[in-house]
Length: 198
Image (tube, rainbow, N blue to C red):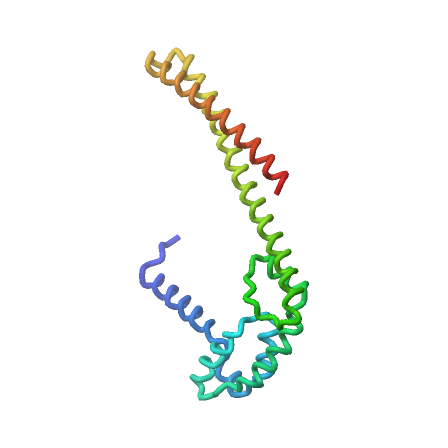
């Protein structure tokens, strides 16, 4: 398979940058020319998007000579937020590790915030458990490697083909590996206990 040359890689990189930049615009020319700002606000609200989203719309449409109707947008967004700001969405946002910036209306905020906090707590516990599992797997792999090294070093220590110095070094290595195995087993037990309490 032929290696890509610098020129083809540059073209691919440039294309990726263009795709990324085009993704920054919230609306294209056709959308800006036919926009119903109340509907756009509603869609942003029901999706739980932050209030600065209007600035992105304004910037996208200004390129096409279209100005935003802020009052209509805000009215639609408020209506959308009333649908978005339910406890189920708060919990989902928190459990996915999302950030809540307090955009819900005052009467809906307490229930949404409480559910968000519960979801965030779940996310924290799941992340902690994943980290413990990762560490546990790493320690188990290290233990297997150390035990395998003990076997090979022990064989070297009693080998007739090894020099006296090599055999002596193998004995020292086995002793150190034995200590490492002991430490790893202790760490594994601690991680297993921590996993139970996650």
